[in-house]
Image (tube, rainbow, N blue to C red; front, side):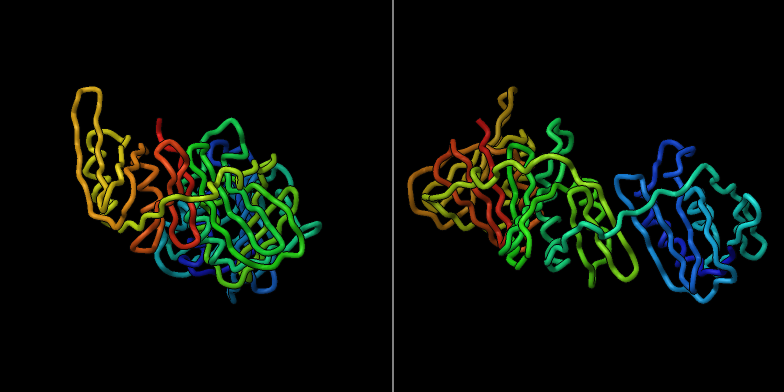
Length: 353
């Protein structure tokens, strides 16, 4: 194979591919990318078996069609140091040659076996949802995904597909975040997408994409890329039972004032006590050394006093995610779960005891 390609075009594709490669063992085929040239198109495949990305762009610089398997990081390191100009890449025997002006490099091709196949759309169901709505939902609930829970289902996002819409849910067992997006779907099913895949999906550029799901894979297909991830095995817990039904108190709170107050008191301790009283909200914290901090802010509220404790991270995660200038706390009492709500996002929080 041989191609003349703009350095920047190739660099962008390789940068996108790196998160999908095996990083620790260069002897693995999954530390390599598969470069394929065909019909004035170049495609680069990268996968660690759990996730994969195929990126395709058109180019008029193809001299000879073909394919090569090459270490992705080494190739990217070379491309990065070249000038912003065309680069010539070609295979000769068991090597890949990269050249630009007076600079020449040679890398050994991988000959250890067949590159892993990407999944197909067979036995999948198409998910009827706007891609940007899905991306926003992932962004809003990502902070509530657990990082290393022995129960694998908590280390990802639960996508619960109903005939009338989709619920995107995550939980670290102290809080549960849910975004509902109305829509019509032919089939009802539920999947669990791992956290790493959720983070990578948010980096992709979404315009017109199609989203497919099976029992094993989630596949996202666009004109210039195909992404897949293996799903987490297991069942989604009965999360709807956790959401409080009847609410006694709903309090509207300005976001920026809340952030400022939390940041002040958390200097002493990350566990913050909040007291809601007549037209006032008081924040306080203390530690084992008897250091204390407190501040308060005006709110519109008339009712009995409510006192509860919560970690500052839980509150700031929510507040740094939402777009609106105000949000709502829906609460019954200080020892029961309460709901932080803004737009289509609801986060159910268990208070600290």
